[in-house]
Image (cartoon, rainbow, N blue to C red; front, side):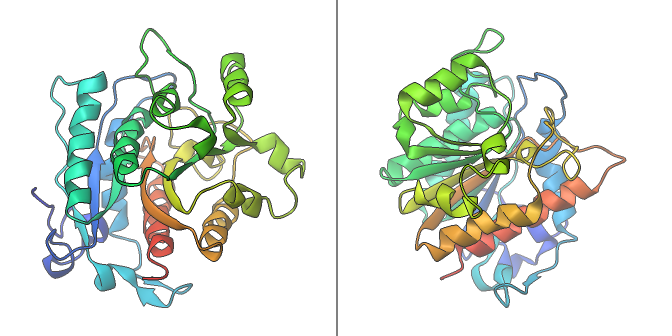
Length: 299
């Protein structure tokens, strides 16, 4: 697999710390955008994240380390989908993630619309059959079909539930869904932490711990940036009010590490960059690096 050089890779780091052979982490860019409900632009998300990452500081004061130099982070050349859509596109992503997992890499996948997440989740599930999925999102994405296709971004979690037990999925921040999705959650036992319930204190003051308590030891994270409040994340296709802020979100990961659980992989999706608004791109790039710091906190 070809990797990107310093001018375009994650964090703009030298080849000594970004070549695939010596790096512990591999970043896969999947700029796939085929189903759009409201605003477009998610296909430009991976590049925007990588571009913004050049301005992310290497040092993390919480862990007192420059993680990128300790573990190495390789950025794979973005996937080219051509005319491949739906299942064919997902197969391309899944194959690349599987190959990297076989090489022993910790894989981060960047979208693109949320449809892409089915592929890395499936690849990780093959390796970690007892894993949980921690899903950050404003939407539950549990429709069976949407606008004529089962491969819409609004359906990706339904596709995941076809090969994983719904009870092994935990959703956080949900605040927009249809009745069909709400009934699926109740019937199948998806662990859903609605934004309104969190805000009303129904999960206690330390709601983050309640989220983590629902997970198994191995945790795959899928992170749709529209989980965040539009005030800090306006650059996304379907923003929803009453979202979450950066600091309270990091507390979820702090609880995860404190509990002894581990992050085995993750994806970040649905950033739709806007030319006149730069901070969401940098926020997403910082989130990626911060999540890696939590994933490698004890390594």
